[in-house]
Length: 343
Image 1 (spheres, rainbow, N blue to C red):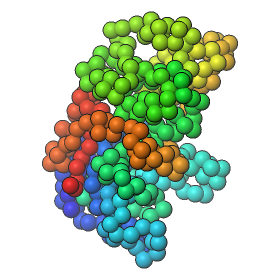
Image 2 (tube, one colour):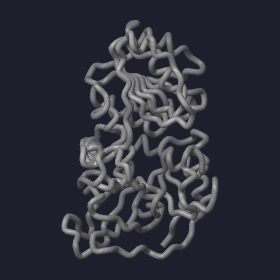
Image 3 (cartoon, rainbow, N blue to C red):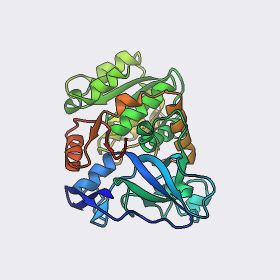
Image 4 (cartoon, helix red, strand yellow):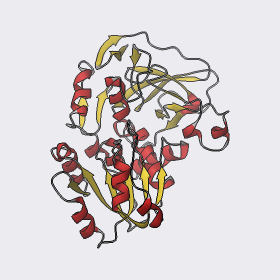
């Protein structure tokens, strides 16, 4: 089978690999569409804390596909069924798992990092990690269920966002775009801030989705906040920048009694003044990964067409030149590129 393999830092190539075999508790999935996200880009560059990944490695963790074979002990899935995977596998035994926090499992493993992933024509997966895709959701759309579930966790589980709230999302990367889309679906008034490089492609994409944007390098975020919130400040600010200054900026523009939710993961230490945060009783929360419920929420949003997935899935790349997809993503020329493995 055809597979995209990382062979070194900033080096990927398409290789022929053996088709995986399945154990009795596993399912063989024919991959349809596989997405590329920020963590894939870090792994590709082999930096930002991803240097531990064994190389060579078949990459990819967010995907959709069709069941083509099932193990003897599998009862919940059958051939021909559309599925997606929860790529972060929890152990089910540690304190966090038993405490209902499997997304922060002490012994987690990730498809495409700890084990070969979904940038391949076929992947073998334990059935317990799969979700059935609703019939009305195209496989191409379902491929971004995993990043959408990160957004549903940030908005629905980890924030206090309600309809009518004024919300700022910092950073128009894939997660930022999806957080904005989910908050918008909830009825919040959303504005997304980006940088000059984002003004070429990612900010216009958000505007096409009906979401306000600001290039914070060429416009005053302070003035926009004043106008957008009548001088009060944002009810909720999501920091999805992955930059160490993001949380400090969020604290500057949230209202007293408001909330900051950090979704992006910075490589460097963050420093910001806490005096106004404490005196303003600002709630600072974090959001990491997602749970079974968040995946189901993401699938329901797609089923009801609450999110314009076609607009967010902006570019399909050939599996014959995988490096082009990574470099285009790193240059902010795309938001959510995908590899198409089947029609």
